[in-house]
Length: 226
Image 1 (cartoon, one colour):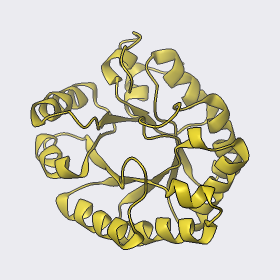
Image 2 (tube, rainbow, N blue to C red):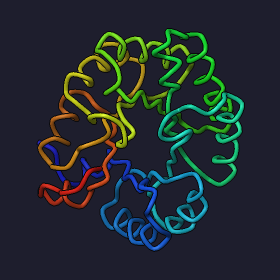
Image 3 (tube, helix red, strand yellow):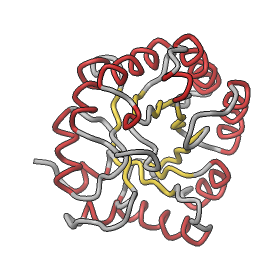
């Protein structure tokens, strides 16, 4: 049995919708502090503001990078990592280059991830690699996990929340089986109720990407897309 506090400590609360304003950021930061979540995951332009809003709390700042398609050139991704770290992020959730992966350009994908990891690890910042698993077969999910591990990343993550599907138990099963002993696993996208959140933790997930945090923690079912 998980307590509300235990589940909260695994949540990266997402504030990533393009229309979310600075007022939304402020309200979400307050909610994160109140519920003692692990981190608030924000857009790159919001890192500084989030850092300020969360400064007297234990809530960390995490951010997305090359979001949501992973399609920036590798040097741009590396620069984005530097900028995010300078602005104060504690963790980075980068999107794998999905198109290159599906083209079978595995060396490209590995080096693309490694470029971000190299910048981040110099600064003790963790890197999560978002696969957008809904575009992939289960075999491809396993391959993407292997590439993320070879590139030195810390986490594999299912989804941006803006692509097809979201987190699914079968995705997490493959991730845990493939790299669960040497990396952490983060389901994200479509986790809108307590039962779903706890089921993923029981499967072996280490962190949860959630936009409907209050509804999940209150044991209620949230409405909306993220």
